[in-house]
Image (cartoon, rainbow, N blue to C red; front, side, top):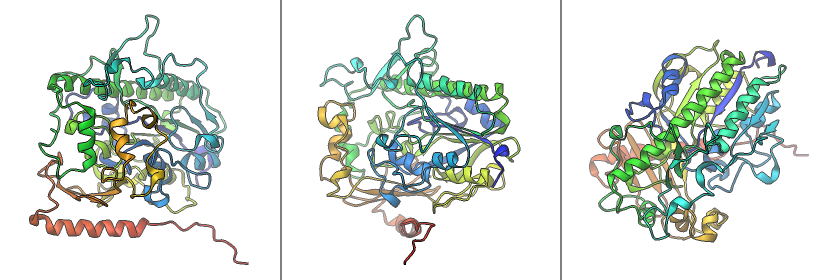
Length: 495
């Protein structure tokens, strides 16, 4: 184990719902992310094929903070969080002598248990934000309930007050709080900053200058909605019909997408500010920085907005994942082609610190990839979600959309309350060339990602792919056998 005074500071910058392709260094001419792009050229590795283990917030966070897949302990809903006896990286760091500062959203541990076990500071800004982040409580932009903007999540340009330099919401408050913490970091402890922001999670709204940064003419084409939905998960068709966006023109879609891109540009700037603060405090070279999102966003692909809980299109399951190691750790800056999972994040932190985990988990250290020794890491990645029939505790009745029927998430949540196929349990097995999705109560999916990167043609019944399908089914079986449980590291006394 590395001695305390030599341990790197750990910076976990965790935006919410950022899809991987909205970064300039991923070849997207419309994306304005100059700081992330520059960092990848000079000091960091950005993973082109990084995947989350669930496509909504809480299950994904439970996975990347524990190294467990959702099925290991049933973390498959927004309301089943990490329990006191379960491993969380923040607690591991705190117990190892880190001063842990947490500023931002939760979606990880039960609020009723408090945060003392996981951090030294659960930040509350001295200057409360003027408005809640991301407009969830300010929905005048929605229009009439029967209108075609009511469930679109599109708010557009946000207006700052005359005395504001920025649209001072919760994200800005937490970013500024993190900067203040860095400036006043304890001298006798390594620092962990955990900054789980809400942007670019919709509603899609952002202030200037970010609103106008994206050149609408450079936006890549959307993946179109299917002409018929028989070969796609029924949940997608259900949401498509309930969101009422079928009449949107391409110009309107471009405005929504450009606003989302602008939200990403804002986060890029906020990340730069935190990195600048590390430099000013003399901490930058001694910091390991992890930038990643919990999952992606439809942003118009397939004619949909927001996300789902049990479909695994790349726009939802592939996420940004960028790592800048401390200066004394070898790095070959680039975009890596390795297949990686977010559960590799805690394993990489443990490897950096020389920590031996006290629980079995399934992450793999990325240090050899970061050093440029290899671009081979995993042969397949996995993502899972949904529920079995009868699992009423997984319906998420706690959501405000259930009680009101007018909540922003109602087009999705209403299907989770039914025992149809829409909210069925499912799992993705994805290689570099193919994606297989096994579903409990409806048709499986198989996509040739080389010929069909937009996942528009389901090859599950195509005899040409029978051999591929068999290989992926075998790989999925091996995955479940390897990860189906974990035996505690401390045995019990029999007498």
